[in-house]
Amino acid sequence: MPGKTPRVVVVTRPTEYESLLVQHATRGQAKFYLESRGRSIEAVDEMHHRQQETLQFLRRAIPTDWRQNHVWRNDLDRFLFEHDDIVVALGQDGLVANLAKYLDGQPVIGLNPMPDRFDGVLVPHSPDAAEHLLHAAAANDVNLEARTMVEATLDDGQRLRALNELFVGHRSHQSARYRIRSGADEECQSSSGIIVATGTGATGWARSVHRERHSTLILPAPTDDILAFFVREAFPSVSTGVTLTEGLVTASQSLDLVSEMTDGGVIFGDGIEADYVPFSWGQTLRISRSQTHFNLVQS
Image (tube, rainbow, N blue to C red; front, side):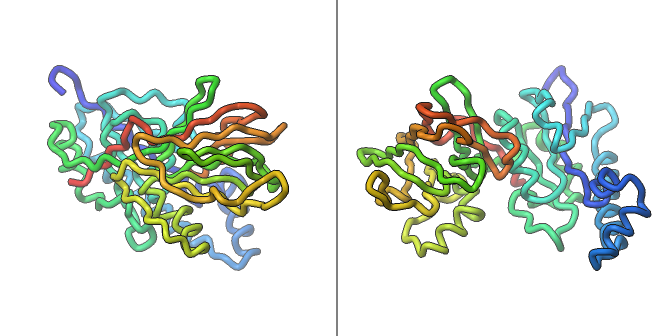
């Protein structure tokens, strides 16, 4: 990045201890709350201190003449990323999925502060590697894994991207009603909603559905330009069918839906229900792979 000082954006989420302080105001009240439920605050303390120590270690690894920002997960929708940012996600794998839709191809370094607690699929690096990876990313000398994302496009121009999966359905436990089309197949359905997953999401929610129904569908890999969709609990009736309940969406295809919900229809990504887009009666929705990839730093 000649002529411009690199900027590092560190993204974290509050620790359980910090969340408890927000809810209960003081450590003493948080301690009482936990003990009344058979838990100890010492374990929560330990995880908080480990996270804070790793955060301080990371800050020391960033050159003093570089720009840096620290963004909480809940503030991501109000933060403006620059196209040449180096993004560091410090925490569990889910944090990376929460972050993905706000980016536009920037490299992401996933650091795992607690490998004994977090799987590290999307945060594969030890904090000890931070300094080397930061310098390598600034020099454009890193190996990037371009992971496929899924994108929903409504007929009014609204768009929503996700790294793991998109959910389309009713915001409550009511049945979702819609017309679905995949390729030449089309039918009206009433169901508990649809998930459309990427290869990254194929290890999460989609995998659970896949295993529960003993599906023979071959799920995509994280870098495959293929999506998998599953209709949850489709209901057979005189006006709704159950034949189009799973399938693959290739790079040249889309899954198309028309809402038949008078209210409560929603679309959200990566499990963030509060950040939804309404899907109202008569609206048309197209779901396909996104042209934007999520670039995860591997080495």
